[in-house]
Amino acid sequence: MSHDHHHVDPNAGDGRLIGAIAVNLGLTVAQVAGGLVSGSLAMIADALHNFSDAISLVIAAAARRIARRPSNQDMPFGYARAEVVAALVNYTTLIVIGLYLAMEAVLRFLSPERVEGWLVVVIAGVALVVDLVTALLTWTMSKDSVNIRAAFLHNIADALGSVAVIAAGTLILLFGWTWVDPAVTLLIAGYILWMAFSEIGGVIRILMLGSPPAMVPGDVLSEAEAIEGVAGMHRAHLWQIDEHEAALQAHVVVNEGAWERADDIKAHVKARMRDRFGISHVVLEMECARHACASPVRWGDA
Image: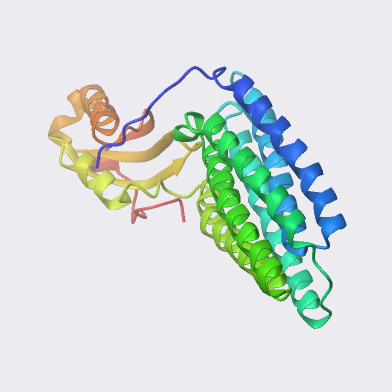
């Protein structure tokens, strides 16, 4: 499976991020005020989700700046994983918010309160516009960053949440169904939790040095072992450095009769890994078949 990468100017989009942060913070203040005045828990739930998006964008913007730092003796792989750490913080925060909103919705079911439906509809309508504007600001950058892509999806989810809040406010105006407000809150909380849990696994996989999900590890080694002169590979490590870069480290066993071509074989393996799988960081330890490791493991050092 080929592994293509799309590279962009790392400084591109900073202005859009600042704009997206500003409109989300402004919207959060308006929604909290409107939720308190109207008594709508659903609006406050949507406000908290918008606030989490704004904070997510702040963390992502800071992580982008840190990720641009060059590698050094303390960080030989560079700082690219700052964005992965930021994503973990963002998704963990979303899980906490989702659980809190679910608890508040259940309490509101048990103790209903009066809701001003007209104010809910007006402010949720404004929120819908702001959510769509924010999504437009982050759409281009979402193609190249796990953090910005998550923020983009969050804003699309916010837009859907605003539509749900508008529907709830309308039903309250028409029929007085105040139970719709905590019901919508539960739906928003459920969606936040589903989204966070579905995304956080990939982030944890990177931090745990897992193999790239788009690759089949066995195929990677088999491709190298198909090269003439390679008798086998063992003690392999295949992991993601960050969202876009993967690395491979392994012992390569060279056929006895091909040892004089060991350097050429190493270069061939590296080229095959780059061209076939997009793995540009490859470290290989060459072994002659006569003196290869005894009883080697296929993966890892155990």
